[in-house]
Structure formats: C-alpha cells, structure tokens
Length: 167
Image 1: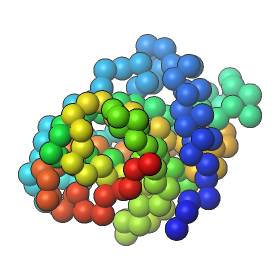
Image 2: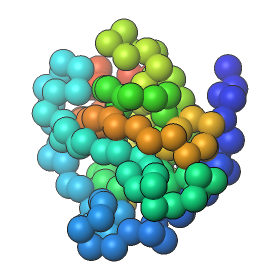
Image 3: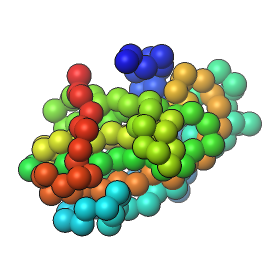
C-alpha cells in the first residue's frame, strides 16, 4: 500500500524545523540520542521514551508553514533500530534518513495499541547517525503531541520484525 502523503512535504517540514531550531527550542540542534543495545524481547523494551510536538509555535509561524519534529539517533551495524510512535494526537508520518542517504518512511505501523502510529524499523542498521522527521501525514501545519520509543536491538530480536523498506 502506498501512503497518501508526500515524502517531499514531510521532509520539507523537517527542513523548516532544522532552520527554525536553536538551543533550547527542540532536539534538532542537540547531540544524537544513544540508545543502549538491548537483548530483551517484549515490544519496545529498554527503549528511550521521547515526548515531542510538531508545529509547537503555530501562532508564531504562518499557517502555511509546517514545522516538523526532528531528532537524531545513533545506530550500530548488526543491530536493528526501532523507532515507534506509541501515542499521537493527530495522524503523523515519520521519515528516517540513514547515514548513507537511504530514506525509510512509514505512516501506519499497524501495532494494535495505536494502529495509525508510524513505526520505522531499520534492519541491520549501519553504524552512524540517523535523522528522524515527524510531521502531519499530509505535511500541513497541524499541531500534534506524541510519544516516540527509540530502541536498538540485537539482530533477530522480535523488535526487529517487519523491517521498513528503504528507498
């Protein structure tokens, strides 16, 4: 199934967030997150819990400006990187850019607790920094709050099941 959102509009919202970020305003200017590799096997076990918000200054920016949430997380070769929104106040989409430029995008993770929440699993990730961009699935300027789980798991772990195809 092809998602109905545009990768270009999702990434464009993230680029606006990068340009608008400054120290203290959001994760875009921060050092990459470093999740510890996990061997536990329950869903999202041992992962980092990251709260976030898209379009946090909707009264400051024009309505046509879509400001996504951007953060970076480190991956280690031979492990999978699981990035999973577990709660959201509006329908979000997530794109993850790997160190080699491959883009992984998901709109609907299909996990029972939040079937419309995006989930990206990068199997056998490369060592390096991955850039995450979350925004409204249509790329429009809709404020949203969410919680994201970021975990690094050993290869073959159930958290690595159903990896996202990169392009």
